[in-house]
Length: 145
Image (cartoon, rainbow, N blue to C red; front, side, top):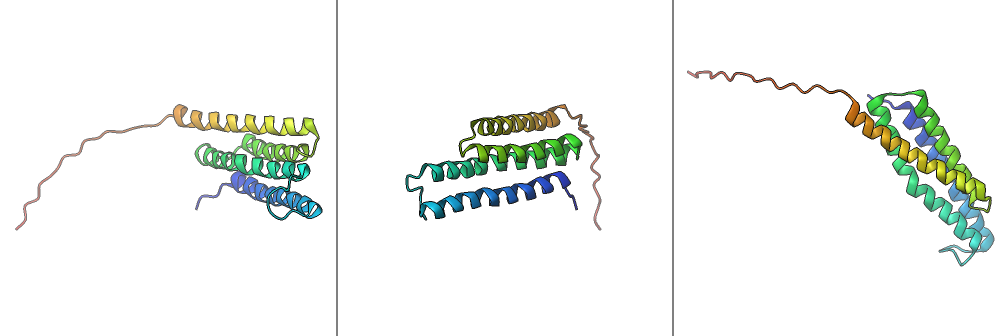
């Protein structure tokens, strides 16, 4: 069995963060008395977009994180990248309530992490030495009685 401790830990953190962001949407829905859609409520629209943006970005980061960890092994830099991603998404969610620098920092860090993981994945594929052996085997005919 292969266990990816970094990916599993960050995925668990991402799931918990998703619940927190969804609860923030639900809280504003209750206050605005809007059960479906956004009702034109700007605060609800912002919270919904924060949640949507999270859901749009997180799968790519988790997939890349897991595949890089699987191919390159666990390392401290992957732990740092995963933790930084979660912090960036918290900043973005808070920033969508009007704290502009937090929103900007959150999305910038998110994009840099995706770019970094994508580059790491490509480097792993194309710079990892592989050996391709081409051996020919003789075919032996066996007579049957």
